[in-house]
Amino acid sequence: MGNQLNLCVPGALPDRELERIIEPWFGIEPSRARIQPASFDLPLGERIIRLETRESIRVPEGISIDEYLRTLPKGSVHEGKMSSGYRVVPGFTYLIPLECRVSIPEGVIVRSSPKSTQGRLGTYVRMIGDGCPNIDEITGPFDGRLWVQYESHVFHVNVTSGVALNQLRVFSQHPASVEREALLQAFHEEPMLFRDGQQMDLSRLHAYEGLPLTIDLEGAQFDGIIGFRAKHTPDPIDVAAKGKLDSGDFFDIGTAPRDGKLVIEPGEFFILYTREGVFVPRSFAMEM
Image (cartoon, rainbow, N blue to C red; front, top):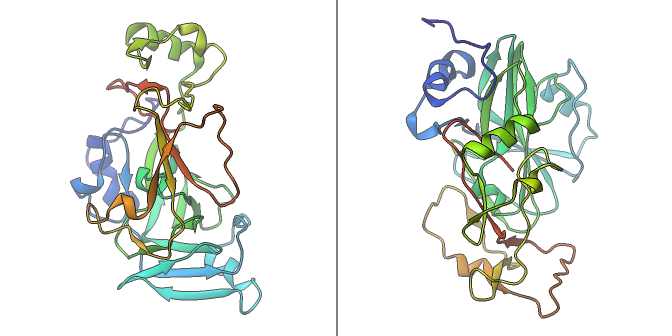
């Protein structure tokens, strides 16, 4: 692979190092379209398995996911293909293998988080791996397949092989999160949290391991608008159709409640504005 990576430096590998490890470790070509400053996308494969359950999948250590599926009751596992699209509907759990088999060396941690587009659809996206009981985290050495556990709580969603639902960050075995003292020091050097255009008081950070965000239920920033509420519609959202859908077909505008309280009923989904704005310094990678 040429020059060895420096895995003694804590934190997420940046894009220039991700380009070097994606093909040998993850078995796909390092396309720039799939690489962000500190993360990258792995495309979905062609298989999709629908399970007659909404429970999270916990695979016993040392057992591949295909082996685990064979232990489930007959009639509870339904396999399909996604090459020409597959409709995911609320009420079921789906398992989708990623396109490639991966080989992660010792001294490396791979963490997954949903792509922001999935968060805006109210879906549940979690990564699991062959023989690994953890969710959203794989520790090397690891050789096997990675899978996405996928659920839609609101919309009908069309998924196709080759698209990405999650993004991966690669870390060394050193601490991957910023300690509170280091965060405070970084906040002194470069403010990261603002409200009403003003830097927030550092004392707000002392009770948190990260940056605290609150919901704007007054709609002070956008003339009484607090966000968006999902409509219940059978019309599907195609995750591959970027920029081709009208948000008004799937969301209503949410306005500030008169009493300042928002009651979210089971089955409802909101996208809400925060009162705070966030600035991410060049040397940081953040996730919610």
